[in-house]
Amino acid sequence: MHCLSCFSKKKQVATVEREVDGDLVTLYLDLPAVITRGVKVTATPKRKAWVIVSSVDELIDTLINAAHVI
Image (cartoon, rainbow, N blue to C red; front, side):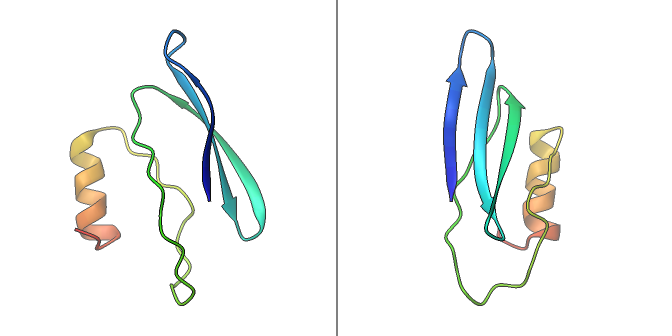
């Protein structure tokens, strides 16, 4: 579960909480940021909870080559 708990356009920051293995992990993100909500599937292999990328090109490359989702 992802929860955008705080968003400040003026301060250009967002706080996002995510459940990982039953615990909550809180991320503090500088804006702009891409925040997505995944669909929980019971038979998925364990992956890294978060991957932080520095550019849109790196995001697309990660989605294609590492996550194999596009």
